[in-house]
Image (cartoon, rainbow, N blue to C red):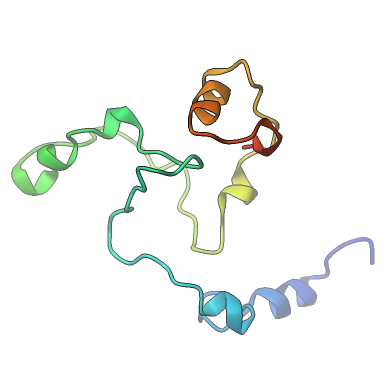
Length: 113
């Protein structure tokens, strides 16, 4: 097959939103719940950007405005991951990200985005 036929695509992806897709082990993986992401301070993969600091205190529920005049670039379902939307490349050792990973004890061979 040189291309994906519409019927094949529908068959494979029909159950994604129903929670029936994937293997049992995939469906049984523990996942966070809640409206906000729970940042792991020890993560070297994804860290809370410093410009988020204090945003919770200025939330709309307390009368603050987090964002004004912005437009949504994309609304993506749970089946879309960073692997789908972000290029993969080797992080160079001499970059800020490389220095950060080295400071966290990550081996250079494991540097990637």
